[in-house]
Image (cartoon, helix red, strand yellow):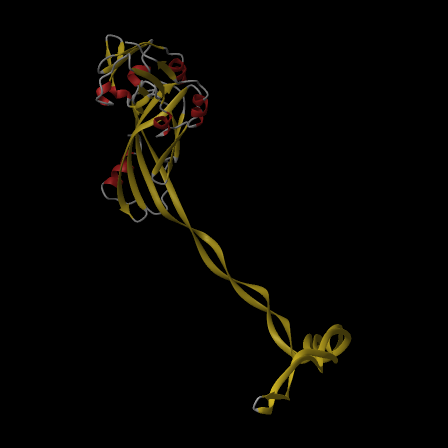
Length: 394
C-alpha cells in the first residue's frame, strides 16, 4: 500500500467518506512490468446532474375566432341522359310464291259391254268387261321460298353519364393565432451530486517475469466503473490478461471498494516470427501414434490440426479424422513430438493404407481473450504461421 492506506483502511472498517470529499487517487495510471508484482490504487467518480426549474418569458399563441370566411370546394355531380342511336344493317327476309305445275299419272278405265252369244238353245246377251289405261292429269300449286337481303334501320336507346362540376361554398369560423406573453418552465443545471465513488486496489502480477525479466514498456490502467481497462502502444510485445479476480465491498449507496488482481503475460513479437520459421520433419505413422520433429519449441499459443485418410481401391479416400487438437495432447519424447492416435480414433494405423496431414498454427482465438493491444494482432496475422507435414511414411 502507498500513502493512501489509512483512507482505504478507514473504508474497509466501515467508515464512509463525505459525498463530496476529494482524494488524490488517480483514475488512470501508467505502469510497466518492471517487477514481478506491484500494487496501486485507482478511483472513479460518477456524478449525476441536479436540475432546477426556472420560468422564462416566451411568446405563446392562443386561437381566437374573428368573423367568418367562405370555404369553397368543387363537387362533382353525376348527370345521366338517354339518347337514341340509329343502327342499320342488312338482314335476310324470306320471300315465297305459289307456282302451279301439271301432275299426270296413269289410270285404268273399265266399261261393260253386252255380247250376243248364240248356241243350239238359242241366243243370249252375255256381259263383258273392257278396260284401258289412260293418263289422268291435274294442276297442283307448289310454294317456293327464298331469302332476300334488305337494308333495315332501327333506333336503340343508350344511357350517357358524365360528371358535372359545381362549386359548393359555406361559411366557417375564421380562427387566427393571437400572440401573448407567457412563461414556460425550463430545466437548468444547478450542480451535481456524487452518484458512485469507487476505489480500487489493483494488484498486478507479471506471469513471465522469471523468464523474460523486467520490461520497461508502459501500460496504462484506467478504472472505468467497476472494470480495469488496459492500453499500450507497444509494438514489441503482445500483452494479455490471463487471469483476473475481483472482489467488492459496498459501503453505502454511493461508495464501493474493489480488490482487483490481474495476471499479465507478455509475448515478444519475435517469438511469433520464430514460430513462422519453424520446420516440421521426420513424420512417422506408428500403429497407435503419429510422431514428428520440430527444430525448436513453440513459445506462442498454437493449435494443431490433423487430416487422416485411408486409401480405398477404386474409390475416393475415406476421411477418418479432420479436426483440431489441443497442443496438450502432444507428448515430447527424446526431442520428438508424439500425438497418440487413440485419442482421435481407435483404428490402428498402417502407413501403406493411411495418409496423414499434420499442421500447426497460431491460436488467434486464444490470443484475443484478454488481449491488451489488439492492434498488434493485425501485424501477427500478416506473418505466415502455419506449418504442414504431409504424407507421413512409416
